[in-house]
Length: 544
Ligand code: GLU
Image (cartoon, rainbow, N blue to C red):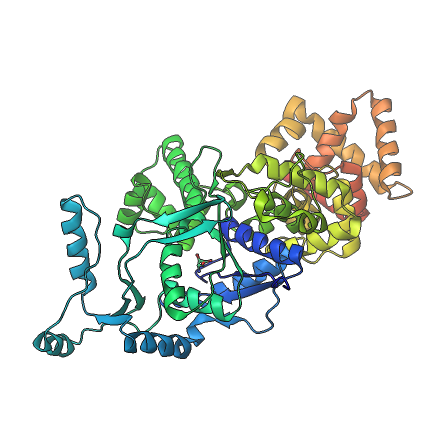
């Protein structure tokens, strides 16, 4: 018998950028399909009209493209455009007595749930019979019915390919569930079953949070006459402290830092609210209650007020990693190891190797720990080994998602030079931030007061007088090239009996505003004579 082609799918709900959990699911689906010579399909599950946005879909696709997880269906499937298909099937189930209209309001259901809770029993929906009068009353009230699936009461069981065991739903948990919502859209459960079948999906890989949903899907598959795919529920991704990794982690960090800010600056929440132009009572609730979250704009406002940089927040979304300057191939390699191990302690792998080695049986059963240090060390090694052209392309991409960086207009040759100056870097963001002074206009260098004090003013303005000498020296230098400039400054040091640091530091502060920069003579060469002298002059004027 011919072996059927493996078909996997990634089915995100477009409610925001892709997070690492979603990316790991997409990667495993993609790897399995590529390993088996099968197909990897992409479907947008946008039946939740209130939460799905077109912009989120665009962002998701962009993230997947950045990771290189290409999908095989030329036409994207949007569930929101398939309501006719779902409705036909739902009507048919109703005609067969396998689905029915239910009229309880969300409030009535919540009350029933509460009642069950009080009695310490699980809430199981019981089908109601409505009288003609009741139905007329509902219609008059403008109530909208949902459609529930009349789930045949029997045990539902499947083999989980990750846990490598059969998982069975206790029969007393079987209940009728909603398949069409009051707004006319199918529920996730219904649409996912129909689409997986219609798209010929043979292997469903998804997070463990979906394990129990699978029972509902099996019941629907039987009623609709569909084949059952292989199910593999992937382990949970956790922070190192065992908490579940999620978007809340960023909010948590902002709250912690805001609390520190209030304390160290002896400020009140009202002060913070004013500084961030936010509503004080709302901010007051957020600062105390870790269950609340700021939305993205509010978060940005607080961060600005307390001088918390985005790069200090833990990355959660694929886009966060991209904006930090990780290489996508590194992120993929790292994500692959969150639950999968090809054996023999093998860790660093190219994408080709991962495709060759990936097998479902090697996905682990236990939770995966997300170690940022490990990811960072992967990236550090990978950029050290990368081909210069690869790095330039990656830097360009980094700048495309960091459009506010002054490096944006840099030429490829300049980017290559910057990368070369900062050899041993971990993230492209470091190269960017450390090189920005080379791209800002000469009259906009910010002089760090401590640097000026320590390096230029101390000991009776010794640094400033060195700077004056250097200005003259540099003005007259025959060639403007890193090696030659260094030699000239070295001779000056010997002549004056000064350590190189006593001379290089004033120069550094004058051209870049702080005591940290890429190699100083390369920086001077990069800036050119005129810009270097202009900066020294401005610095001396400020000191005078
Ligand atoms: N839209 C669902 C989600 O994003 C898909 C789950 C599944 O793969 O079945 O969680």
